[in-house]
Image (tube, rainbow, N blue to C red):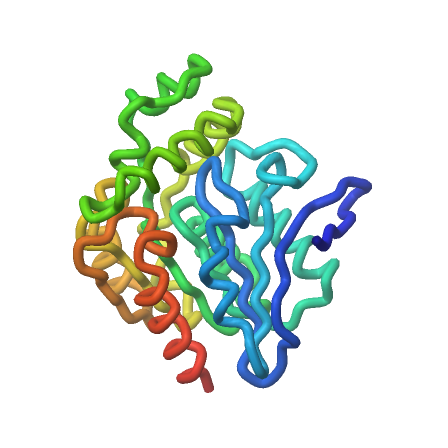
Length: 253
């Protein structure tokens, strides 16, 4: 299990595949998550394709503290990619991870070969009820039901609830604060990076209209919808996600 040291602290990441002509992909998880949310996407690794997923600061097995602004995560990702000497890469992000990827594209476009945005948006306002619960040190009771689509089996959601309860509410509060402050709706036309946008038709947190806005305003974006999937698209429908990402990688110049 690899760790990388940055400014004296250890950060955990998953790493599969040799890399090469088909590219390097780095996945960024969402609020309160970890690199384990990308377990199915590691299967994309193979001849010429390297896949990495990192635990952001204060998440999973990584040291450090969570940030309450996307810019803090963006700068961590910049240091992470530089520390590993990664080539211009495809950056995939889910929800808050998508916000980080978009912000990265605004500041470090030369470090990117493409963007993969899953359950993402140009603005990520969080409901006051969710902010209030986590700010008070409590888990918002309805959040798991909001995260998953109607076809998700109950045992899967029960496991997700246990994982959520194991995370410090302060981590969720910091992450949701970062999302709540994020708004680049007027900056999307400045992002010239080729982009794949994926969304579930039953996503209640970043509904399909968010994906359509990205598709309409990013100069080089295509949108793929997955029927009946919710916000946790890469866990709910991994085959559909992997097929779309593989086609996106294969079509790269």
